[in-house]
Length: 350
Length: 204
Image 1 (cartoon, helix red, strand yellow):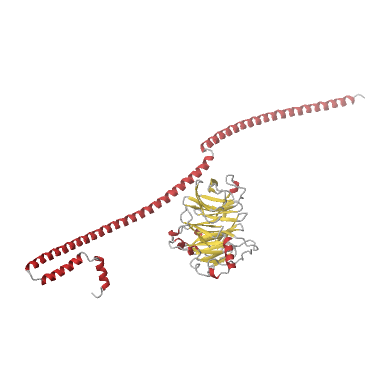
Image 2 (spheres, chains in turn red, orange; image 1 turned 90 degrees about the vertical axis):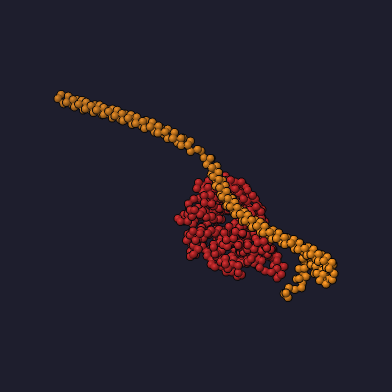
């Protein structure tokens, strides 16, 4: 079978009667091999953007899919467009823009315009890389609302800060020895946590642009799992506490004393973790979204429809309380929607 | 009058009294008997017809009164239902408020549980470390021992210094004595040689 061509046919926009059987087979193959890497909720709370490995972004209407008159078509995207040449690894939303990044560039799209066909990006920026030969991928984006800036991190092992008003790159924080997987913001003291392939979680103070603390997770016996590696795949923080996982076991750390307090007994490496109310939600290799209590007990395991999950998104926008759902996406073309954390309500599909 | 169509009238009449039995028939009969009575001749028949008409009339009045009472009852039932409806609406609103209140309480309880679990997690870690009082006591005793030992060391060093000085004095006195003895020997040798030369010279 031929490999998929780089610029894929936008799914869901071509009427099925005008497709040749070859195109149908091609589309079906595309759907089969699709991975959704990132999700982001619109500022109004009614739309969900999902980015996949072909560089496409699809916008789903959550309010339509959750309403009582939802039909099968409401589970398809409202619009799909080709955003990047490479996979879209990370997306965040500000109060007016959708920022997406993947293949070394970060692009901005206006939420107000994004539903119209032929939407063009508002701007695109590339952080200053040391070598101009290879363009490293951007794995994680983080918004710092206090100083209205965006932090990008990825393949070149540095954290770049970009001011959102001027578009200028202000800092480059160096310290990681291998590429960075994930970022988290510690709100009280404006610090950024970054976790990478080198197995260390580093805390950076944004005001002094220096590394404040380093936690080498794999060096602690209780949580290290050498057979999985030392990479840190996911990070979440709650000011005093931090959860990280990946190669080592999913562990809850107390940041001020840098001690691991609870180890969650999950064998599969976790790719996304977040704090929610009094629970910790995690997802990774394996179908289920896991809900943990802080004491280490597994409260619930809710299976999704994808064989592995890569991202979780909680829609907590105050403007749309009826769309307050958890969405999970991963190694398939489907985004699972959980209206109640206990079960999967339905799935949106690319 | 022209606005109300025949259909409406027929429908209404059928609805009220479809089968023709009852009030409608009675009123028709009354009309007919009134006309007959007007046209009748004899006194007796007229009187009996008159009585019959009165009774029919009172029957009509009776059924009208019944209908009025039923109408009143319906109105009062409607009022009653309105009242119940309003009460239920109020209690629904109250229930909504209670639900919102309970949701807030749940959030609060979840926060409390989270704090408690964080506390427990930290407490577990802290328990692994030894007690602070014991460590302080150990530190104190170790400090005292250290002091004591340093005192001993000092006193031993002082003694050593003293002995060293005494030996120094002794050795220097011995040296001096040796030197004086050597000097004396040298002097006595020189004197002897001088004497021997003096003896050999005056002989020839």
